[in-house]
Length: 105
Image (cartoon, rainbow, N blue to C red):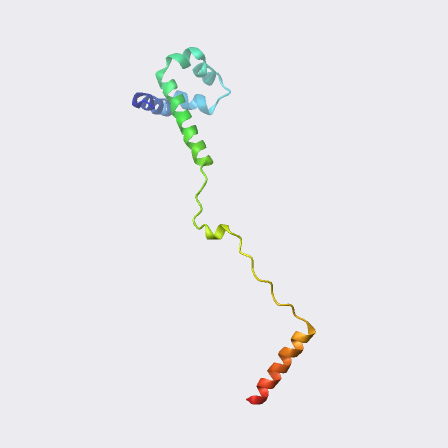
């Protein structure tokens, strides 16, 4: 974007009449300012349109940007080992080992 267009666009952005027109886009003032006769001859309005387009492009680029993964290891799913099956015989073995160890003490 040209420096002059940027300055004129910022001037139009601060202009009270243009701000009123943009705030009330259904009103007569907006329709007059957006009319091709005014739009093609007012350098500030043209600069504002270019400034607005550049901002929209930057916003779209930021929205489209995909954040980089910080840790590639975390992207791989970790399969946890299966917990041991608890059966009656497992419980009996555990109890008998506990009772044997308590006799030694």
